Structure formats: structure tokens, C-alpha cells
Image (cartoon, rainbow, N blue to C red):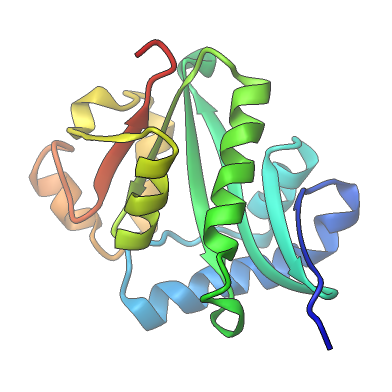
Length: 178
């Protein structure tokens, strides 16, 4: 049987998948000892309600997710929580999800700088294909709420020790003005 893959901008009908997405993020953070930060099901639902989430399905099963957030009055947009279920990896889903999230960001906030933090070489490659460049953290948002999101990451102590100058994550930025 041929798998049916769908990458969609999540709407109200996707709210029921928030628990699955939150658990998928937590499992990946544990198994990979990555920089993924915990996101509660309610936070995931909020992003879906705001029209700021992309979800992937293989057949009818949740296969991946990513969401956007805005900072400094929409001057910056971040992509976070990019996740693909282990059983569906190696199919190009992360690239497809990230591209749709990028298009969603450009549609909603055409003049915003788009950024992300990642420890993943695969995400760095995808970001580079989309026009992002690696940057030092001071070039990213100064919004305190964004940086609070790092508090649940296992590497938060590094970010604190360096006074938010760097961490194990790489900051990447797409500037629509360049």
C-alpha cells in the first residue's frame, strides 16, 4: 500500500493531536539529548488556534509538526518544535514541514526576519536551502519571552553562563531585506 503524506497548515480540526505532538517533542528531547524544549499540549493547541502551526500526516497518523511565534511586534518570527516521528523519518518530512512553515511565516509576516535555534545538522541544511545564514545570538530577537522558552532545555545553563551570547544551538536567520 502506498502511504498518503499530507503537510498542512493546522486548523481547529488538528487540536485533537496536541497531546501526541507534545509527547513526540518530549520523547525526541530525551532520546537525542537534544536542545528541544518541552512544549505543553495547551501551548501546542494555542499555536494551532492562532493559525501558526504546520502538521504532517502519513495516512491518518500524526507524523510531524512545527510552529511559528512572533517577537518584537512581528519584527522577528521563529520556527520551533520541528519534529518528525521516528517511524516516519527518512522520507523528507522535516524538509517539507519546514518549507511549509517558512511559507506560512512569509504569508503572515512578509517583512519579518525569520530565525531558529537548532543543534541538528539536518535542520541547518534545510535552513540554508531556505536562505538562512548562521548568526551570533545578539542578532536574534531581544524579546525576553523568547529566551524564557530555553529554560526547559537541558543546555540552558550554557546559555546563562555565556550571558546569552551562544549555546550548543546554532542561531540561523533569514532576513528578507538581504
